Image 1 (cartoon, rainbow, N blue to C red):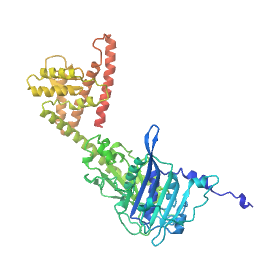
Image 2 (cartoon, rainbow, N blue to C red; image 1 turned 90 degrees about the horizontal axis):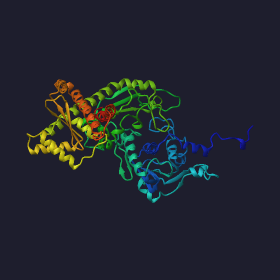
Image 3 (cartoon, one colour; image 1 turned 120 degrees about the horizontal axis):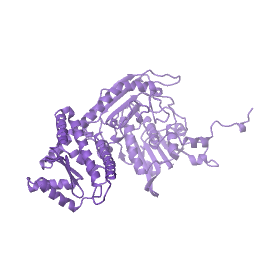
Image 4 (spheres, rainbow, N blue to C red; image 1 turned 90 degrees about the vertical axis):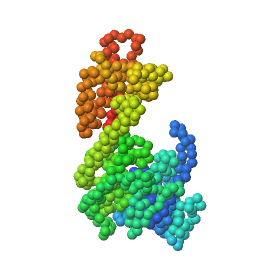
Amino acid sequence: MISAENQIRFVSDSTALLSMRDSDFDAYSAIGEVIDNSIQADSKEIKIRVKAHKEARQRIGEFQVVDWIAFGDDGSGMNRDTLHRCLQLGFSSRYNDRSGIGRFGVGMTLGAINQCKKVEVYSKVKGGVWLYTLIDIDDITGTPAKMNSIPEPKESKIPEEFAALVNQEQGTLVIWSKYDKQPVSADSMVKEMDIWIGRTFRKFIWGEVDVNGSTNKLNIEINNVKVLALDPLHVKNERFPSDKSSYQTEPIVIDWPIPTEDGEIFKDLASNEIKIQLSLIDPSLRDYQGVGNAKETRDRFIDRNEGVSILRNGREVFYGEIPHWKPAFEEIDRWWGCEISFDPILDKVFAVKNIKRGAVPITTLKQSINEKIVPTIKTFREQVSEHWKKRKVEKAQEKLKEQSDNGTATGHEEAEGVAKKSETQKPQITPQTQTNANVLASQIHANETAEQQAAWATKFASQPYTIIDESWKSPEFIEIHPLGGSDVIKYNLKHPFVEELYSLVDQLQSSEADQELAMKLKSLIDLLIISYAKSESMFDKDREFKAERFFEDLKISWGQYLKSYLETWKSENY
């Protein structure tokens, strides 16, 4: 028989706590656990405050270091016994109860110690007094340990600096300090908290979730600023009221068998329905290809929108790309949204974790969801692509008209623009460039007014390459006029190659379906010629070359410049 002093405890408190600090939380999911508890306590107001001080850090400069984060609410509060146990890992007055948003009884404490070393809790029930308890990792893990158990709650007045965060009649205050897992500077952290909380708890902010029999709107503040709901479907636009709402499909509903377990508490009204909502962002926010990286897109967080939002009882538990999802996510997928909602009775088939961070459908469910939504996603992708193609043609026509109005349209604007944007080395444009441009413009456009000649000269000198169509009797199909910083390339319309090329382009443009193909063909030919002109301009005209070496170098540099221009062109077309 083993004596009491020789018995070994199943868990070593200090070592276990230190190990648990490396749990699968991040700062925002840990914060979410505190908010969950407030919601479950019928809170209608949750106030969060982050206090920080500035430090100078090597390599990154000024960094705002978190002193503490405090969470106050107006919920029902905790009595002495519940408060005493609330920081105990594994304690829950609702363990395995799936009717709310908590279930396992580890979230708040595990999340807190993942982020900080000291957690203090004040709580008051209606008609009671403020009670206080805490845990401090340093005191628990020190040698010798100063704290071996959770202190019994004692009556304690809330410190003045936190008083405004709670309802004085009832509520709870949680304070995190000794914060040593800070992910980013506090100012950046607060911005991300606003985004994460607004998206994760959007349904509660809208008052769409039944909590203990009521659907009151939840107000959350961070540093005295109200958190607005953030809808990843972009159907509701509180943050961007001038935006047009996304197109929303009819909800897709999947009935799924309920997995049963002995001892679990199921509500009579619990549903086994999985609801899927799809949306497509309004064309005004996806007007052209490449807008995904524009400032107005990033301001709306659309650039983060490639993925799925999964909600459990109205609370988001997953947002992002589902592993092994087919078809695989592409950049174009940021323009549609998908929201999957399920009741906690289906936790098993969504592999819900005990920290409410991550919920991925099991393989058979994933396949079923795919079958339901892939046709719509393919349609959305096609609609986005078709809109971009249409707008590209329209924009080209608008640009052509604009330049036609001042008499400088050439029909080669796309390739000229690509050459201007390309990463290739660009010659320096000098005052002499403008002088040369003035002379060439007066020669080529001798029959036009001085004002029109000046407009052409400005165009010649303002971009690396200008292509114009001319007719002259010569076996040459192009002429290149260097201006000392920019070149003008003339196409000979009387050359058989140019005649055949333009005939083919005209045939394609006569068909509405082939207009984009015609534009692409013309631009690619233009880029082929521009890259040759670029390559030729890089040779020192006063240096002698052997013919073999000259043509070899010309061929290589021509190919290199063509590749560079093509990459720029493709980035704007695909």
